[in-house]
Image (cartoon, rainbow, N blue to C red; front, side):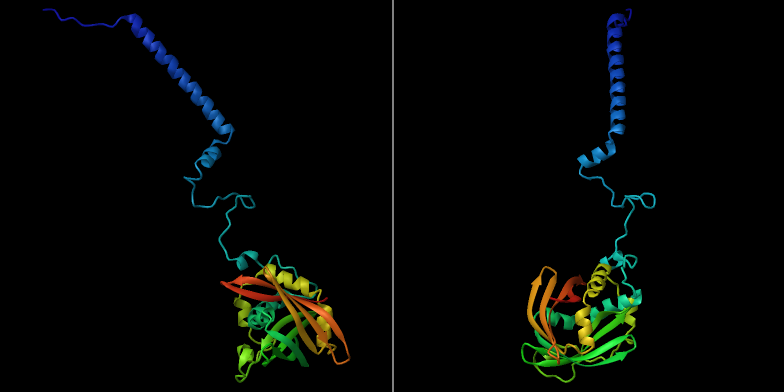
Length: 282
């Protein structure tokens, strides 16, 4: 018995192979067109956007120095602000400016009493010139009728006066609001240097303090030279991140001046901290 081998008809085989060849060519052409469009139209960005960053890397993008995509290291607000952006008035150097900031941080407890309306008035006493500034003795009268001693520290640079600190000097317990005044630490302008070297400075806050205190000369000069001997707090108004104290300054020679003390707040280590920025004539 002879075996028979089936041979496909040449015509049908040729037709099928022709269709396969044409389809393959079309696929190649379409793929090339897609690749060109993908490149020209920014395909990577389009796909990334469409996927909603599903495959985005957690590594920040980098580029050449100065490029818009340069990686920015994570830092605290104080570190990020840096000292390079500090705007120093004439006669004010960086160490003194930083001292103003740090001393206000350490005076925050007493500044907060002004901002929260707990102080009724402040009477100014004898002043003394010390290394670095002028210290003026004071007595704060609180709304609850108690009182506490303290010192106002001012310093002059290139003819302009700057508020540096408001120090409490509580001794024995007196009951009432006076008992919360910070105790006397016997510090002066030349002591307590350690915090100055270790405390980060918020340059935006410090620039505001420096700029506004340059406009506060009438009140500061009057307190230093004895023109004004008493400050009466008439009204305290708080807004978002600010507090305005409307005050009246009076003196032994019937001198009087209406003024406004402006304070701003900053969240530092989770705590609202107040700074005195200006003390201007109303």
